[in-house]
Image (cartoon, rainbow over all chains, first blue to last red; front, side):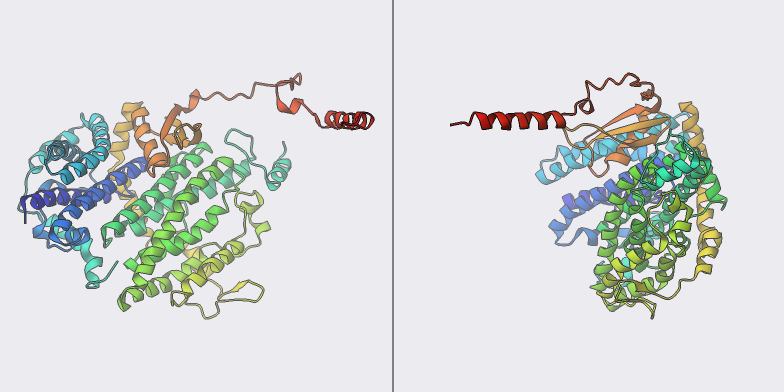
Length: 190
Length: 297
Length: 97
């Protein structure tokens, strides 16, 4: 696998797993309004993952869905931060959201400057949607910054942003669930 | 205006706005009806929510998430209308989680397989959109207005559901079996969905023109629109008596009205578990609402 | 706080009332309104107004029938009929060549 594919997969896996995790809030967020907002963010993340997987899939001769679903849990390159199951803890959810968006902004800046026109172009598109995520994350950061449980969550989760390699048990559990329908009938179209 | 004049005005197609005078009985009926609609949207999230994590492709994942998102958005719009009629959202939610308020029968049942996800999005939403389209002419104008947006969004849900079902039907025998099993499971609740066939002029919701059609009219419309679509896929509707008479009326086995009554009064197979989930998550996010609202005050 | 939300469907069009939104403050209201009324790209602009900023004009009464600046103040049908008949008669006396 090329370093390009390797890097893109890492970002795609982050977006996929975080999108999956954020979608767990659908229907049970603190406000109905927030439910709708957070669901859009989850959808955007999965949309980004799909576009990134597509770039890799074109290179490897596979499909975005196969990359998203048909690898074993150990093969995912996502960070520890995104794989944690945090419902129904809103303080830690927002802490993760804020930490991720901050780190992701930096990463997208680098991708936008990439010499690879395809990658830079996609990063531009993704960044336009991420701008809204950042606005949303900052809005919540401002609201919760004096809450002790939120400050603790930030301290607890910050070291996990760049922690990659070993996965916790949460990722395997998530993988079991996200692939169960797909695995139930081998080779089927869904 | 007397109550009688108001009633005549409603029955001749009149509409009222939030600030207009209205009889207490009309207001109470409106709140009851609209609140139950809001509760149903919100509880309707739960049967599908668990499958958001299990959607088998990225496209399905996105569509299902968007559909459930819409349902929450509808609950939000509908509770706003109830709030303007005098009952705050938090009071509605209190009544909902404590089991005092009602929601639609179909949301008390389990979602067993991915086949159920398709059948719910296609047929439960189809049944719901028939009721909702009949509310576009509701005598309470603010409710009629939001129904336009709701119906517009629901039409995507039916397409999503039909697409899931068609893909399964074009798949393997096992996949076709998923659809047939789900249809068999959901047929009873679907037939009960529009309520018992009381004559519309005895239905207070029709008398006040909160809704513009009777229960049986809605059920006939559902059967007429969807049974041919079900049959053409080679699926079997689990009702040997189901047929369309020469005069265009559908005959069917009498739905189990006792089951309907039992289920909507809080005794469905999933009622307790789902209300329990609402209760827990509401309690666990209570501090967020307190923090945000305290700061805003 | 309740905000009334107006949306513009396409550039150049008038804003129309879309509905209302409850939020702790304007910042939240803006985020939530764009989700509720814009997430399918159905709006190009949203305009949020605190509900109490809306004036009800119930007191704008027309006790003295000032219909001259409204279209319902002009009933032209009868006059037009008379004018047409008059024109037809005089045309009979003075046929156009």
